[in-house]
Length: 384
Image (cartoon, rainbow, N blue to C red; front, side, top):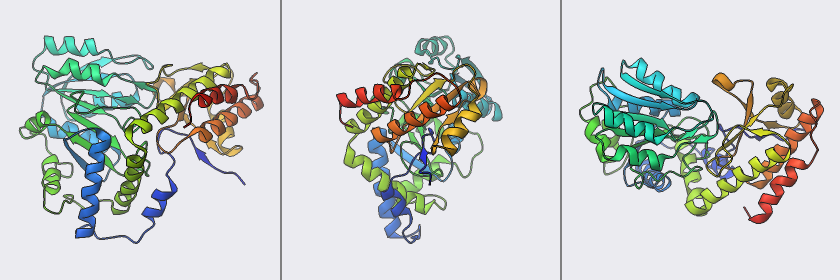
């Protein structure tokens, strides 16, 4: 028998309380019962987002909410700025191109963060830029961009700031209102601890003012329709929601409320710290930054002579632990260990043990227990 541990940065493990909630008999989405649940979910999403802004929900992947930001904020030919430091930052570039936007593109090497000063200089030089698109937590590399500094760079300009926090929301803190982030995109399958299929987007007053003038075509992802549903006496969605996922989200957000944001972010910081310590303890090299920002995913450079597919197949099929591989130019060069959401010290210990055993079997000189010991020293400093 193999007990499975999903250690990818999305999808992530789902708590049993959430699985049980989703197994309940389905309810109709145009009833008072659903509206009561939906209203509670909306308030709890605002709690996690740390915002007073509306948070809209869509039955889609996170990319759907990203696309919604482009089509609700932009008109044909609009000037926008895209700053990308990984695969998912590049998705903003691709979306801008798909809709014929005039994009100024800042590309950073994988593993390096976006420089807020570059954004500030571009906005000073070009007042016609309407929207700035950037990634908060770059899932492909483990880099977390400084959204507080980026928010400060954009705040005094007319441009609207949009960020993808799909792997950050609930694990790498983002203070939406305090940091002046106008639009924040998130997804269900990472730190929000439910399966894929829901996406969320918060919208500030500044962003709403732009959305009301934008002229790109939209229908399903129309924010105005979504806001109208939210503002009804019995809140609802414009179109049929993913009801069972919403029920699961209600349970997951309840768990987050119970833990509290301060404890939630602290737990993720400790997870990331222990995982990085374990990697270094094994003599491996980190690809993601070695600081507390890397609380969602740890990226690890593969040792010379170790083939990505063989390593991850071995950890999955022999030891039940599934890691993610690299993407784009780092495909085959790194593995990614996810720890955003329903994770604690036991998951990290199991993951590191599987990695040590697999490397040993593949002929890499690793001392068994070296990574586990390093992680335990971190966990010994604080109960998680």
